[in-house]
Image (cartoon, rainbow, N blue to C red):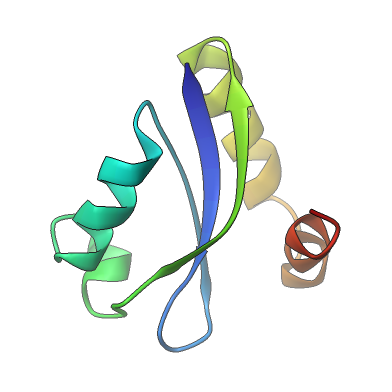
Length: 80
């Protein structure tokens, strides 16, 4: 299993990533061991996630989400 996720950072910005273990990854972000972007914007809060059968599918979806506007990203987690 693989997951795409969107977190909201302390400053209100959104970060999108993918992982095979979503709980571990969110913990890494909050401990400062995640992406450089989130290290200085802790804590992060999980706002949205999607599950996929393969890493490849998750990476493809991550790219799609990263191209969305902030408004469209918010729509993703407002509907779930």
